[in-house]
Image (cartoon, rainbow, N blue to C red; front, side, top):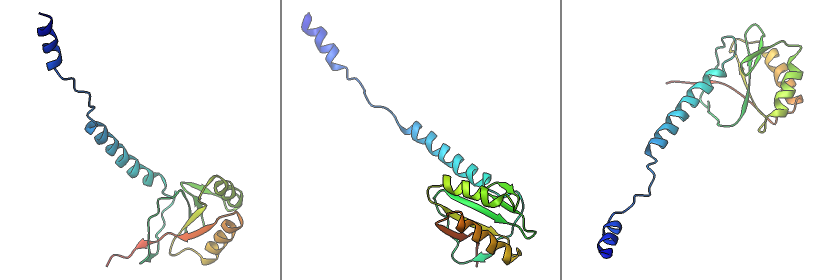
Amino acid sequence: MLKSKMRSENSQTIIAEINVAPLVDVCLVLVIIFMVTTTAFLEPPFDIALPEAHTAEQTKEENIFVAVSPEGFLAVNESQIEKKDFPDFIRKKIQKSRHKLIIIRADENADSGAVIDVMTVVKKAGARRITFGTEEIVE
């Protein structure tokens, strides 16, 4: 009688695997949501028309975006900044950034002197790399 009990207990196998497919599905959906929402939050508070170029690239680093409008308004990431407050504000932002990459999004009709002034202030604030944001030319 004892042998028959042991056989019935041993014949059942326990499934000890975890099904990770639902977890992977949820994670992929969350990644897509984060990718879409982060680009929406980094828009400047005013409209700018970026110039077109063949070398427009997307980078995956922690970037600081500086926008220059045709009227000379400045914005850092999503907040508009007064010209007099810009040097101190950008210095603090650059000190917090690890990569210190500044992307200047200047409107194609913006005054070149204003763009050069922004570049000078950003360089003095400690930026290691400066680049310009452009729109890709669609042929």
